[in-house]
Image 1 (tube, rainbow, N blue to C red):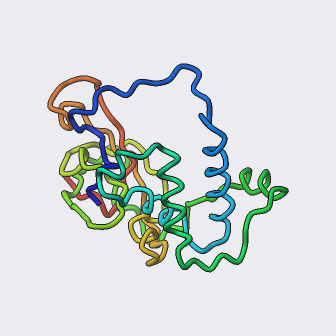
Image 2 (spheres, one colour):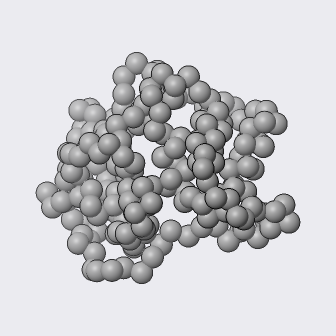
Length: 199
């Protein structure tokens, strides 16, 4: 979706300023929101892409007016509306669950369409629903830098339409192609196969 969350390359927001020695959490409530999100995510009532989509799919003024963990809390509230939560991650299960992670790689349903070194163009799509292709990288020509294998496709998974495994590639773009200038030298974007076509 073309939302306020997709800010890459947009003018008027100023530089990103990193906080020196930034803590993981600035307040105890942020730690609790993070913990609640992990614990309830283990319920299986939704997937990670649905969770991300509920944080991103907000009117611009609302999205830009919230802090990072305020967005997490608002997303969790939306997910819990009418959810059938049958399992919650218990404190003693957290270390093993986090160590195991949530792998998104899947067996390939077909051969990869592209290989390292291929020139590709990203499609210029503006879906009304979740996508992982940023606006600044749409309708741009780049080169396949790395083939990651097949992974859960966030665009369908966020809608509850299934994992629909797709090949995932790292595509390198020149800064000139993306921004119209030569600095930095290049930018790499992870892009799923449905986002790409031969250049």
